Image 1 (spheres, helix red, strand yellow):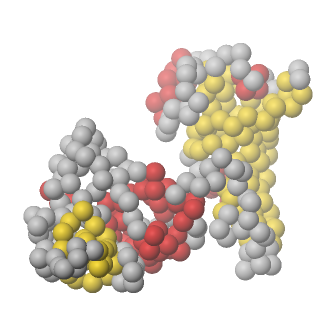
Image 2: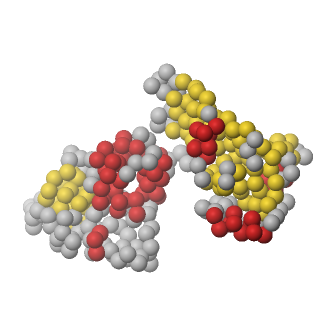
Image 3: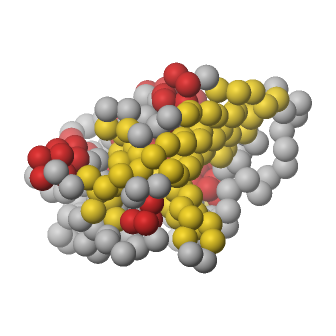
Length: 296
């Protein structure tokens, strides 16, 4: 018998063949994938060390070996490092939320009651965690199982109730700069012949300025040569709190080849909208303001 993290251990009745108990393998101590295993049981959510008997068998992860995927017969320590990591949607959301809160895997694993090795597996490879594991992760990250599964992605954030004793406070310029960080997604407000337009863009922070890419002739390209407003925010639905930062200043098109090359080389990501977007626009902040909602 061989298994790896994320597989299911199923114990059947020797007389009827019916499933008596099943659970998720969260730790495989031996490198060759042989027993014993640490199993989180579906009925109690408890983790125990198990030496499977003749009435037990392993259900491997549902995916089959293919390009970019890990063959199920290999344990985590045996997985070749040259295969690209391909996390599932849940793993990406868990990893994103953990990094956003600046938490280590060990911290989240301890809070949620799972092993750090399984958390690493979940963040890096396709997996199908049990409801108990998802509940533990949601609690550790201060979010909900629905959000970790991707529910509500087509709805605007902030649909929950207001928190207890909310307080709105101003952010000083240094706090605003810290929340702008190095890159992300923000919204630029541009005056057009049809009125005011607000458009989301992928942005970079370069030497204190806001930079984004677009295509000539687009709505946001019209920002060059005007004064604009640029806004970023973060909303925590689970905790009913959040913040926003507003940048005001002139925008200009970047045309110097050396400057364009420098911005392109330092970009953290390509525009999510895709397509050719060779025009860089730079916003020089003249005023930074921000607010934060805190709750008890």
